[in-house]
Image (tube, rainbow, N blue to C red):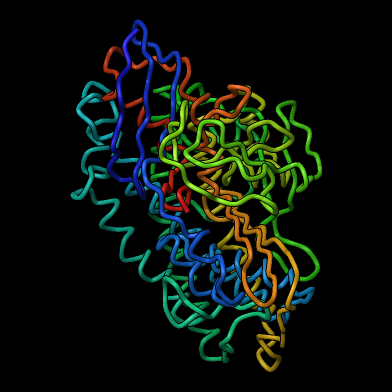
Length: 480
């Protein structure tokens, strides 16, 4: 058996290494290492409660709205209040815009360039992949990046700037939108929809949203235009549906909330296709193989105390578990829990999540969010308030559970005597890239890599890259 270290990885937010035990080209064991400790939870301890709205978004520059909304939601729930109806909608518009930008940045800049590697030079589609998706020089990124800039102008209208805006508060959003700005937002979405329909899908949003079966997806893939169709064809050629099988359990906190509910529900999708309610009380964090001290296994009573000298530890990530078992987070989890027929059919056929299904879920969710954003714009009542009054109690605890692009994001906060006593964060990549727990059970990526055939290329294998990138790692959030 040969042990190799894959990493550090380019085109990844933060620092990541993976230790691989390989025998005859097959990965027998993987250990995923978050190599950087940042300590945001400790930075927040002892500060006034509202400081979380300033500090938490700076955990990450590419999903700062998700961190802002998680912090604001935790403080709102801690105070027992509600945001203004317009505040929920405006926050959802900004959040969806950021998540769409993350999905497509992953597709065009992080994931697809691996198919322009020389390893695939003999494939029939290689001549199309290189000019379209080669890193830096590909026409896909050149076409997408100006549209990403346009999409993020949504943040400028709603939040004043991006990233790290203070516009997201427990009571809603700080800035009202007027009639002219609603028209501006509708125009931005219209322009972005044109890009999606012409470049990404090669079809209308309605076509993408109407697909419910694998047969319909296969029929769509036979079309001549669209980067989504190109991905589906090469995924079939490379059997990406058989790569990177997930742990079987999918977790969603529910996404795009209002006072009455959410666009996508919370819950847990099981390996047999059933969907169960989410028991938040069943969430724990194991540190048996993490460089942290044992302080408590629940996010509402644990602390993050680093210890760089610890036997058997190999990561600065904790190991989140739901009912003592690992769970996968992400767009595929959100749509599975929502009962999306296409995603459920792909999971059932593949016997679990796969590289292909994770990418399909992101691109289908993108179409769903653009459609939903148009509806939210119409729901705004411009003469009504965008933020309601709130006041933090001197002593209370609460949690903010939201969905970032990469999956379930939770903030747990306790306030004592007007100061943050304890702040705990479980990020999506913490779920997906967790180390083993005390029982030796691997995290989702670790289990997804076991059994992978590297073709004798070891850490340089393109298949290895596909599996790791299919989870879209954000290691800076993992290290909070």
